[in-house]
Length: 572
Image (cartoon, rainbow, N blue to C red):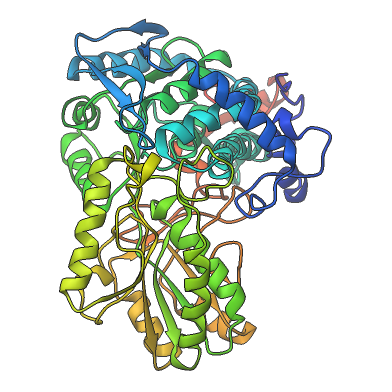
């Protein structure tokens, strides 16, 4: 059911707002369980039942063709491409349109035409529509997750988490819009004689916003920024990664089914070299959100800055090379469990994955032994099967890269402690399955600083926490970081680590598991372009620009005004 807009614009207390943002899927109604990345390890049985039922329905629909969605209309392109599953690359999930530069231009044109009216729509109405979108995403969570598993290779709980996080992100940004009363703030009035000034700060939308999402979180890292842009009053053009068009299409349908006007949300698929490049190069695009690699992100930032008539906002999240520091005083069981979950969840294909583990020498042997026991127990296989925790990497090309990195470790003086090979036995033969790999290597090895984005973690003994911190910070990235040790040591860690998302003593995940309203998610240095974090206080205002409004009236005319806020209502 859609949530009716609130009749008041009064700001909500912070505690009340924080409680309201969760969009609960039907599968958990009436229960006490709330799915997050921290709670996903012990879900109620009903989640498995719902997922299995939805999976059967999704498998029955494989191979269909899906259109572009531009200006509220479906469009077919001359050329198509097949979306195949990394679980079995002979399995075609769907047929999608190979959108051209002209298709991208048409999507931007449609968004530009729709943006003014959407931007002038009362913010309460925008919130109502976006809350409806969040509710639809949550209601369709199991079907969404089944698609996510088949297309990306996520296990069922990772997939369900991806979907629920999306609903929560959109709900969180709706809460922010309500809490800030549409971002209309009074300012001090000028001390005039015989006149009265009424001053306000109003945040208004930019216009056309492009969202380019990655393959690894094809729901949350598309729906989150799109939802923020939309509730702020922008029109959106969304391009998913070429590996995840089906998940992107299903998300687009949720937004459109929620009641967005034609042209406010547009969906295009196609090569990044043509369709994507046109979106980045278009002067009619007012802002862009990109999530992906550092190299591509920096290229987009430079292109976007050089191609416009004036500066435009570019929100880029560009990966990480995330360290974990383990003190000699750590609870090694918690440390090993947290590192295993963060290093190998989603096959290491998270920008927040733990990829560098620095352990004080007195604890090194015991820690590595505990970690190896956990890693060797990981079940790798078809991720739709409940018992399998690790699925395939995203593609055959990624699996080949994995093999190359393992060989580079061996050739460069490294030692692979476990893993280091493709898995091709029996039903795994047609997929992109790789063994979770833990390795040691000399300090100067290239892979200590290179983001691999695969199930490979590197571990090293260190003589002190200071040495660990030096090595932890000695990279171009600064996304997430983890620590295990005493409370006093943890405070020292927080004060010295160069990362935007930091965890201490967390068995649920050493460097992964941020959730809207609970952990801000954003990077420093080469990991992010804005210093503002997803799912926290300062993210939504990035999709808005400030306008100061001053109205001066003669003192004698003050009594004739119809209301203080009248002059400031438009455009909010």
